[in-house]
Amino acid sequence: MTPRIAHVRQAPTAVGPVDLRHVPTELLASARVSDSVYVGNAGKDAALDRGWLLGHFKEVGDPRRSEAVEIKWGVHPRGDERSRWVEGEERTALLVLISGRFRVELPGRSVLLEEQGDYVVWGRGVDHSWFAEEESVVLTVRWPSVPGYAVEEAVPPGRR
Image (tube, rainbow, N blue to C red; front, top):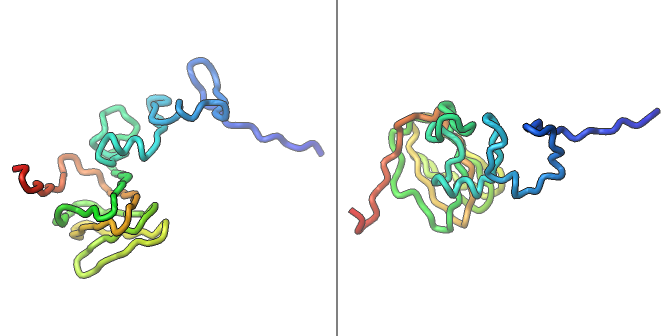
């Protein structure tokens, strides 16, 4: 019996297929591959838009634009906390701990995320806040992505 050889999936381009095993990594980070594909790095791309990777706030034509969902890569130094509670939330949310130790405060309940992959989900109308007990990275998914909806941020003292 002749062994079958697995073939590397190739991405079509204007000049023909490209074997992605031979494309330098720096060419893949944060670059549009086509009109419907975006390849990026969450840490690098998040730094450009307050952590947001996907949602209604991305430009029309960007494959990361979505009215259905928002995704955020949140990097929080130890002691970072939400400036004020979110009240009257209009979306459902999922928050997944990537690294660190992160506390989510909900009405009558405090949830501590300690192990990579720990997560919490809360529904529409659930008020919440958070606190980074250690330097933390969290992935937040919210749905739907509501145009024009923004939680009012507290103005830091001395900046009025």
